[in-house]
Image (cartoon, rainbow, N blue to C red; front, side, top):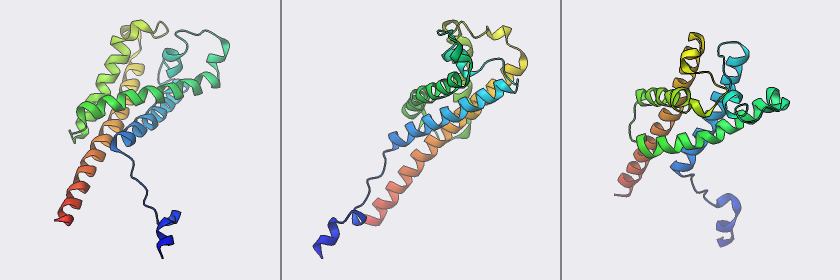
Length: 171
């Protein structure tokens, strides 16, 4: 009967850490948001696409205008989103509010379109963008920030609640 304990199906899987789940949330959120950014660009809701500020600012090769440039920029935004998720996890994870995510998205939009805009020569100045681009990208960043923020905060609160339930059962 002792042999049964060593079987693969009888072993308990270690749960993924809260930090790992937060980073996965950030990566997936970045992939989804940048994909919508590309769609918004092709449907003329926005004058800028993720490839405009990540790839086209430094590389002017022909391939950056095609599907490969879009895919690479979507992947790059996913990787950069690991950083935004890590920052949110470190600073705001205890704030269980939808509005914190909205605020975080607005802060990220200001950083991308106002503060670091001089680094990306392919992005027009904020005052040169049309109002449709401003509104649509701001909405996209708000959705992105809400997804990242609320997912991480909810996961943190849920993890704390489950740990407290386990402690209560042990007592």
